[in-house]
Length: 131
Image (tube, rainbow, N blue to C red):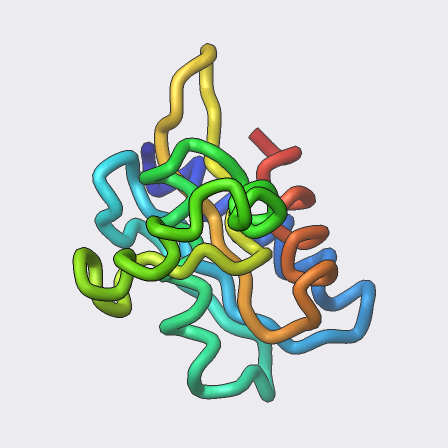
């Protein structure tokens, strides 16, 4: 993950958020969950930094979208009950996080916070489409 790639994806995601009229925050992490890029729209809520980063970390770690993770949560409820004790407040499997792929490999994750779950997911996808 480079800063150039992270900035491009982050800006694309916030453009989509602006198009739908939702103030959001975007976080981009590398494949190890280290923050590479963060930006927020004017008037984005103050918790959106934390939620966007935690969604990006979950997407990078699980190598799938957080939308997919939440849709399949009933298949592995033990994971959901134990996750907070293993990685407290660092990975949020809530819609809005998408892994970032390059040449078939996960190079990081993007997370959006500030909209409804479907809106966060839509903006994360708009960000990953810029790679």
